[in-house]
Amino acid sequence: MNINKQLVAGIFSLALPLAGWAHNHGNLDLQHGWIKQPVPGTMMTGGFVTITNNGMHDEQLLSASSNIAKHTELHTMVMVDGVMKMRKIAAGLALPAGETLNLKPGGNHIMFIGLKSMLMAGDKQTITFTFKQAGEVKHTFMVHKPQAAKMHSQDGHDHDDN
Ligand SMILES: [Cu+2]
Image (tube, rainbow, N blue to C red; front, side):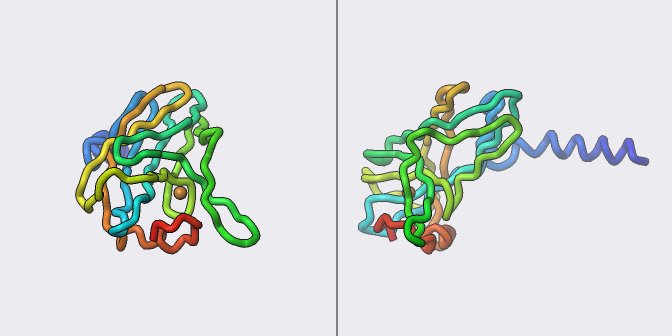
């Protein structure tokens, strides 16, 4: 009977947010934040996260900050003379109501420049985001080994972080 199936599906979907690293900050849902373990000797690395705006109003991700590096920046990838390069995002990233922002290897990402200490796989770090409407939202990021971040090390960007 359909009603029973829907009831079961409903119970499972209610249970899902309890799993993993999902955290709700009002209408913003941040999931799967991770930082690429930097190659020894390098002083920068990238961070990635999925942010969904479940609210009724458009948002804007203005900036990111952390204690792990001198500078924490939002970066985008742009094509310059046929080569993908990283650029700091000064104006922030739009996050319209109902949409998802994917900060991922090869695309928009968080850049940690001037790391203050070595980050090891398994470490957890708190990153703070500033949104235009919601203000400051913290999220716990996990450090993963470079192998897990292979795409990022091959995305051809122009920082010498590989
Ligand atoms: Cu970058």
